[in-house]
Image (cartoon, rainbow, N blue to C red; front, side):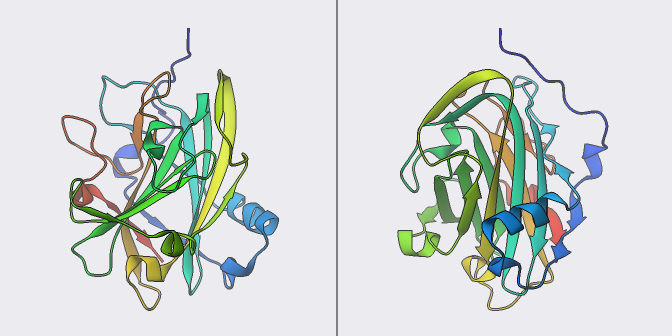
Length: 225
């Protein structure tokens, strides 16, 4: 029988909705290995809110965040019982796989961007006014988002307790509509797996809604840059 994790009780997740990113000059020019080592050494933040008790499974998920004058970088670290990647094409249904997500309010203050990536590095990126009002970015636009993952870009369906993987995204501020480094970002970070053995929906900033829904910028937290 698949293992179930209890929500983490070693941190006060109720008030973890504001953090400060670490400034790293020229971060986007680091090699993949140097970028990984640099981000992994930073403070970690749990993506640990189990907002909907009907989905109690809670993989261990932390993220590290840093920024430069040109981009913001997020490194997710995940340990879970079912590591799955079926979606191999850009803007495919990555949320059904072992997936990490970074949602950010755009510079215009009206739209938000959902950046979703499965464990194999397949990515979906959209500009949205709501869950149903979206425009996906083109391949050319998405190519400006650098991705580094611990797993190869190929299908995977691995079951067994305590499997770990990590993924990094380096996102230029231009993607969010900024022509300069903003003072902060309104954002939320998630871990999901809609079609994994144990569907789960974890968030960094709490979501007080009756059913799973990540498309709720009114509950985004703040990341100071």
